[in-house]
Length: 150
Image (cartoon, rainbow, N blue to C red; front, top):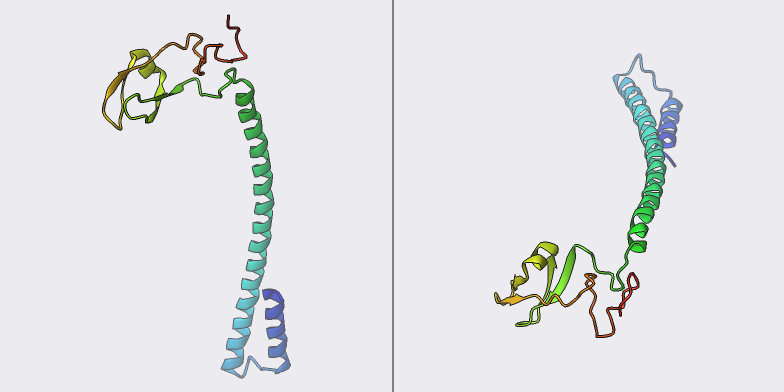
């Protein structure tokens, strides 16, 4: 039973008591209270309808955003020329002293020297990766499909 139905039932009970609002202060009070409850019930129903409509619109926006995310992020995956999936702006290197894996950017790579934040030791970077893709070279080439190795 909805709130409006409950208020209508309450109003029917009050009318069934045949209360005379002109003679009784209590009857007048009950009548005014029932009128207020009717307004509150209608307001709540309006809010519930608005909430349902907003929920549907939010679902539609969420679906549209999902489509945009697929279009944007799938394009990034397709443009990845490197076999190892590394980001072009960041590189991973292992500290030769403590073995900690460090993520460095291109500016640190250009400097050629890194200080490990874990053990505080400095070490030179091995720039033997001639193709610049960031992949590990096992002697047979790095395995990138984007360029040929001899």
